[in-house]
Image (cartoon, rainbow over all chains, first blue to last red; front, side, top):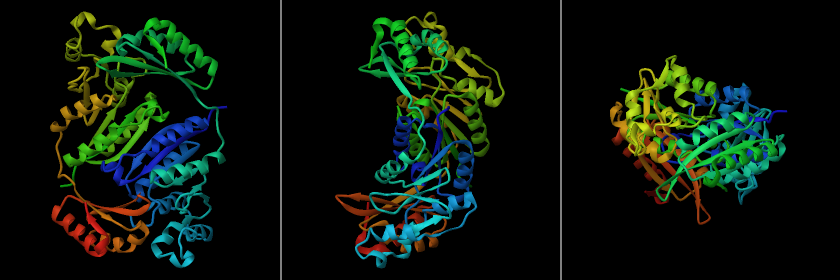
Length: 245
Length: 245
């Protein structure tokens, strides 16, 4: 059976303006690879409800899972929860279990829940909470859309809480062979190998180090024996130029 | 007049697998902000022609410019140029000026142009070359789609060569005010200010440092006077908690 698929949707003007560099996508990509869930697409959209709704509805129809990051804090520009409710056509309101979680984060409990803080307890009808081990304000899963925080440390713990509950696929195995030759000299022999191992993904990534050009060959696939066979074929084809990293 | 708009399309399995963290988007975002071109959307797609074609055609219809990175090297997995030709419905072949540029990069000139290297001289019909000051193999602009390399150092010099030729908008001015209070305590007063300055983008970004919670307020807009007025309103509203960074 084919592995589950996924898309990432990053919500945030601060990424598009260049103020902040998105780190959550890279973390998600690594964790999903380990879990055998294939990340197939990433989108970054601004804090604009119509853009979020359109992206969510396109991606949730196309992939097994959609992961989002950003826009679930207490301020006026945090519009992700409302946008998800709009995308699914459901209502949204303050939920008791989410409010209790929030209250547990403040010294004064319930009494400390200002209007702004209560915004973080607004959850679309029918969603399932995602635990936030750091600051309590929960994320949520609405069907196959998993809504998490933009702050990287919180994104990490939310994903850690969520991932074990999703069906995993077969992890993709990868082998990297470093070749001490420029990519253009690698291309022909590599194309033949890629042809022989059509079920694998074989990528080539040029680099330069100490003024010398080299190429990393990355062989990826679910069948470990096949991946090892392809890596061996690469090593054989390039002989002394090959270094198995 | 409204500023030109843009989307970034990152092409590469290595980003989606988590092997590599994309750095080109962040660089592009910063450069476009300086040039007054609004980056509105980012997509990352795999090395699959149908996915690239669909993304290119959607984005080029929606934004003034589309910038792409990745997939223009010499190997079998470099399919961006062919995908762009397919997206525009034009032919693609080895172009003399691109071949001459490539030849200039090798000691043996023309004689060193192997079949693999010549792949990098394949340019869609009607495109304009983008200079590559590092390794010569050019990028190209096909109408409003600007196709550049994935290797960050080369992406940087290609963008440097391209950007002066594009119509710039009014640069967005931003001011950041650091508040020594958690985001949830900032929310209500900030919403009022955002309301008063509806033409500006006012974002709030929580952080923690040395175990204390703080919030960066970022005011952005084209009208510098208005941006300064809004920043002053934030500083006034939060008094001693405000630090103008």
